[in-house]
Image 1 (cartoon, rainbow, N blue to C red):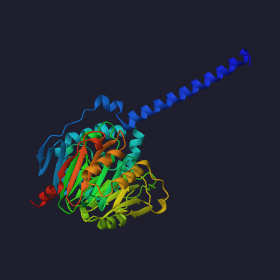
Image 2 (cartoon, one colour; image 1 turned 120 degrees about the vertical axis):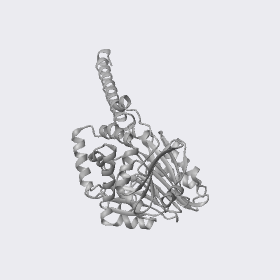
Image 3 (cartoon, helix red, strand yellow; image 1 turned 180 degrees about the horizontal axis):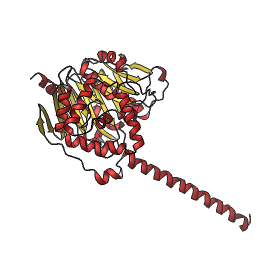
Image 4 (tube, rainbow, N blue to C red; image 1 turned 90 degrees about the vertical axis):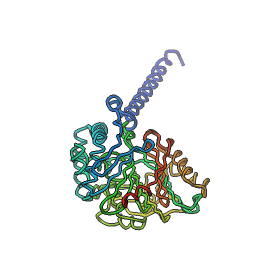
Length: 404
């Protein structure tokens, strides 16, 4: 081929290389923008947000203490009273989360209007106890009720609980007692991870219970009650969302407040008024060693039972009509660990397993529930939490305070 003929070929080759380079640069830019805006730390938060420290105190019969770096809020009384107590002791933190997290998440006016419409629709199915609590909190925290309503319902329309659980009992453990390990992988936006805390509820009616939570929330994403019933919610990617039903975290909170065992919890979830609006897995375990994963959506209700004393859960439905769903990498990794460590699981082994399957950048809470012993092992305050320091909290001792 002559030199004259080669020149156009070289030009076309260079042009293609330039196009590929431009596409790669655009893709990299889009990824960085997404990471900054949604997953890691958005520029707005990095520049303007400074965490508001928790301060120990007491108000109207409630107490906020800091135990080895973990803020623990103990509430008691009617729902209105508990809401007022939380507002008084967490006023600065609630206002900071509304300003730096919720308002940033819904900074687009059209997006916020749509989210508020969904929140109002969910409010119609909200347990009245939770509404009373939010109203009481609004009074003392100086935050509009509408903001608190949105903060407690947006999870039903926002795919953010990208979590994992491993629940074991009997022959799968080193001691025969049930354990539930739980990674909470949730969008922090550089803000939420600084405000993780433990809230102990002593309501007038029902069970005392503990929730690993944040200021301003009254629902439960991870918790255990005074009878040793533990619960952890996980988003399902492949479930259908109807939008017509109860708010998920508030429903799961009422499950812990009203139920004592896994079987009672299943019956609670089957009741029409407790069918949730979104698609979630709910891992349950109790002090008697019963355990299940409830796959919950408007048009799907299946109960998965343990196999060889083990239950694994991530972010898909895999029972009933979803039984052909491929297992994701975290699920398969936990299967591998279980096959190797069966019969050896204790708290430390569960912690190390959670450290192998967390999602980078968003793993803000990690915990192990020991239902029979009434204990919680909790790592919060940094990302990844699964590789942080776990602190033992004797929940049974704190639940006993309800009768003091």
